Image: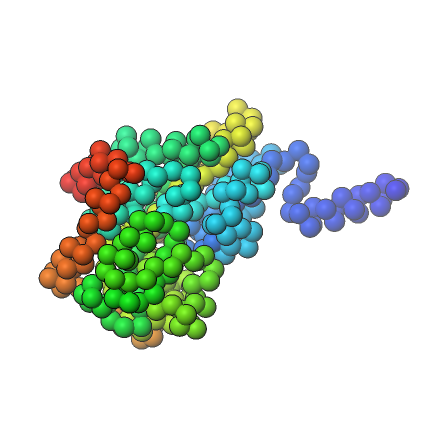
Amino acid sequence: MNKFKMAVSALAIVAVTGTANAAEILIKFSHVVAENTPKGIMANKFAELIEQRLAGKVKVQVFPNGQLFSDQKVLEAMLLGDVQLAAPSLSKFGKYTSVLQVYDLPFLFKDIDAVGRFQAGPEGQAMLKSLESKGLLGLGYMHNGLKQLSANNALLKPSDAKGNKFRIMSSNVLVAQFESVGAVPLKKPYAEVFTLLQTRAIDGQENTWSNIYSKKFFEVQDHITNSNHGLLDYMVVTSSEFWESLPDDIRPVVKTALDEAILIGNDVARDKAQSDMQKIIDSGRTTVHTLTDEQRAMWVEAMKPVWAEFADEIGQDIIDAAVASNIE
Ligand code: LMR
């Protein structure tokens, strides 16, 4: 190949891969949500910060909407070196560790500030390392928000959910949560939820306002209950092998950029929990219900036995620490 042809083919490689030079470290960041969500915005911000600070040395490619991997596959792919960063919801680590199940216990945290206090405390921080024996490392938590229940019938009291099929994330605590009200939980990938709801193959689901809005679930559900009954937060993970392979002068820069992007993502999460709820209400496509204190107490009473069911697997001390985080 002459020099001109070589230069042209090198340019073609750059165009196809988006990677400027072979010496660059490529970080593929795979996630399943839309780009206009807290996690989508955080991932893009992280890529931008890395571009500003480590151009020519590190490049981040973000793959949103499950384009690269579903959450069911992403951690295996990470261990194989096919992806370097992901931020699955805390409900999706059951195959790797049981302590993270604490985050799925219904009606555990009173608000996102309580979640933040628990994550920043000793138990929350130790959990970032709970995947180490499996070759994975938690680099930080990120908020999405509290979950809401939706269905084609109004869910005002627990018996309203009886017999309904609900899509859940892959968590056994969530199985128990829906079974506690006589509903039928089905573990399904995020990418399938809209179609399952649209075709009425399932009756309902639980998710945050930003996910319900960005994936248009509200357009195919007649009712949403502002239940705040559970949490959907994330852990940003990498493989220990990849993390340790980063040069010592690069690793802290990557970590700082990630921490900054997470803070921005957390602010977005807080805003969207309000603004996306409002957009859904304003759309008029669904009815949003607010529970009375009495109705809420009925849901708590029905679902709370799930805590005892998982106390041994999670550790009562961890559950106690999470409860204590509700006190400012
Ligand atoms: C879900 O599967 O519902 C969520 O984990 C999606 C997400 O990443 O927020």
